[in-house]
Length: 170
Image (cartoon, rainbow, N blue to C red; front, side, top):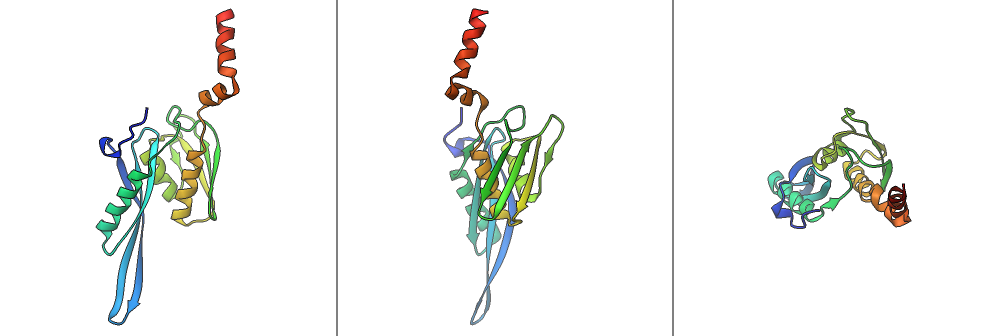
């Protein structure tokens, strides 16, 4: 179902956050940049990457490379997620709720960018505690990783076969 090779896919990329850091040296200041980038195929696969370099375009390129390596699939159901989930990473907590048709993406900055490239159209999310984009993005990724497909859960519990059996008997 999912394409294993990141190069073969048409991936959308979005820069979430760029941070400038100054290191004071004998001759003045040396500036370095960190770019937080999200990459997704728009069909339930998303990755996050962080790139560091002395110039912004190079940092973005490194971030995109890392994001392509960390692509994670998750179940999509009618443009939203199958159930409510809470993602936690560090001090960041993100509560993600499925939305009805026409809701749109109701989420703050960093989390919104991730949902846009992931292909989610209707969702409601709230970032709690941490406003740090790195922690909120990673918390959102943890939440998406913990999503379960309803059919696979039924199969594990043995209910899907029971329902199929009942339909045959009826």
